[in-house]
Length: 103
Image (tube, rainbow, N blue to C red; front, side, top):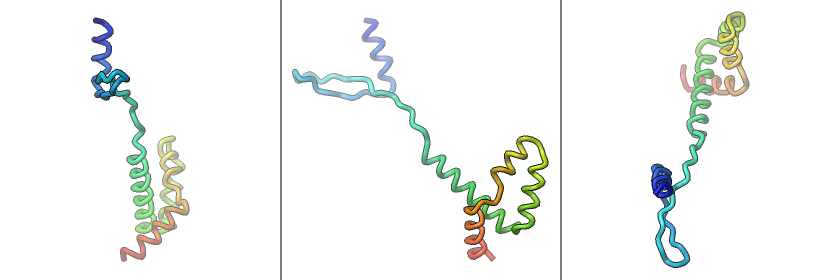
């Protein structure tokens, strides 16, 4: 009875039907493997680069660099923000595209 209850508890994530060699259809628990949300992470990175590019285009290179430099003088969290927000080649490329699209 314990074995049946344990197997039933494992089937909370679903089950897979399989046919044995003798023709008996048996339900086996589906193995639960949580997946890493790679699509969401890539989307978040793309949105972050677009945000940085838009800020770089709207503020200008000098003002953007001044704001990042002021962040570097702050607390640990502000320094981490400055590291994330520094003007990398992707940000500059996106800013150039934004300048062409928006006046």
